[in-house]
Image 1 (tube, rainbow, N blue to C red):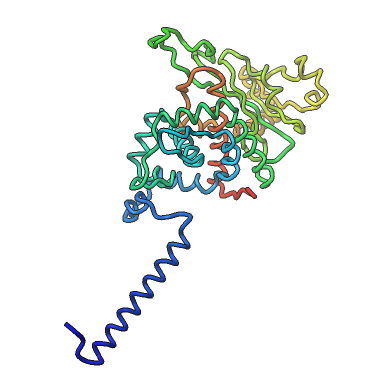
Image 2: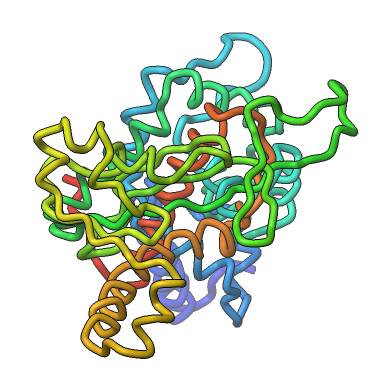
Length: 360
């Protein structure tokens, strides 16, 4: 029906003006959010009232991971074939690999978890309307690329530099310790044999088969600055020299490092020989102290309070991330994994403490 009065023409003009304003505002909003468009996962989760622990953890980690720095390290080595599946960006694959490490997943398990979890899809910034989840084979090749070019070590070193520049990680003293990373002891596999690089060792009354993760931790902040992986039967004291930084003046350790200051490789090194080794007394010696010497017992208590910081990264890696038992064979693969796991543990501790990192 055609307009019959001036009032009708006025209403039509107002309606057209509103439509124009809405169109202009929508265009400006799209331009402002072009870098991070709303994905299918964002729309599906927009009506969710409760924030799960997984969502909170991923948002926390997304805010502290130095994406730009790590992607720059990976990009020169990241190549995809010109033919075949769609090329996925280096950052997308890095995010997927970190999910695999943080939730202790297999390649196929990571693919399935991302397909099922909206929180993981948002973390990877995937829009399942336009693109698919990278498959397990793509993730496998990406992980092998990181191992081949030692990129996880470079990522760990880059993060350590960022922590020092941000004033989070300090210098002058370290805490050293080691923890067992169990490996499957079964021979029910294709080779009908255990991992040849994993060995067994006894601690107390318990036997362990697998590897040891040796770590050097900053005495001030409790952040890991050095990681070494060996077979489980390697003595802790033989690796101590690799865990001390060049400018460390003192080093705390448990009774497993007794006599480290008298070893040949320590005495003959001018840098290591000046380190003040603060070694805990053995349990048998502590029984005597409880009976007669309160002052020495107090000193041992203070040593223990400092040494306790070394256990915090182990808690995150072995309990939160689930790497008390490894799924990979060989020292090289497990060392690559431990670099990323302990780097992520450092980031998790910084996020919990509310520390801001300088990544410029």
